[in-house]
Length: 300
Image (cartoon, rainbow, N blue to C red; front, side, top):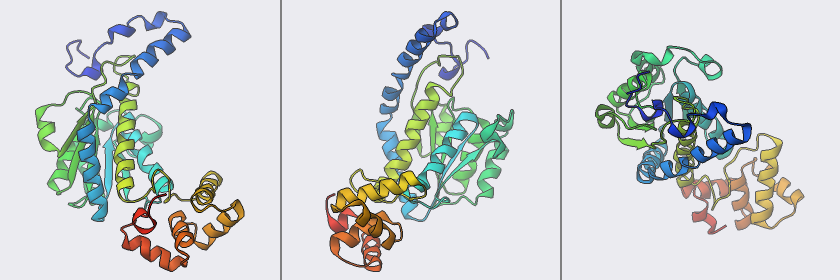
């Protein structure tokens, strides 16, 4: 890579030039100091991230989907965020999806060259039938990944709304291509070009905000309580019961029974208890309120 490369993520970090001489503790100090700058870089994109949340919320309300598209670390982070939405928010697995250059194999092992063909990104968009109700988020730390550009171009042609998430200033043609540009400039990495570090951390934070923000707006939380979670394991079942114990003022056994009578739906269970109605009526009232439980029973 040329030392004159304009991509910030490919430049050498003067603060870590001698990191190979550092002790373990000094390595921790150097990396911690660099990581502390990430939150400010993300916060600088406040308005752009908020605009992204608005796009995603509107897509969901219109029956659309959110797709993350990336290569390498960026693609894996998109898949990670997508996979965590169903247990956290009770969402359909089709609602948020991750697309990675190289396919499923690339999740576990690098597929060299998979990111270099824009036509493959376009084909991935076509394969999923992405259209005008959907949102596509292209993730590229350096902002130059051909696979991501190809996907964003095809998504735009298909009428989808588009967002790009990057950690290095973008070329003008990319900015003009998408609806929302989120660029958290995290600077040169601790190890030159290793964007799984600061750029990866910033990307994770931004993706968290996009889906969490949209899901909150859809009524997937009551205050900050996770009332649409899927009790798919012991930890989540315990959390569900504890939420009912806290919000309904009932003991564990009663919370367990209430949850069962509500078909495992925490939100429905809370409405049943608070309003003294059956499962069907509670579900009807929640649906009539657009899924926002606060509109049904007020403050938590």
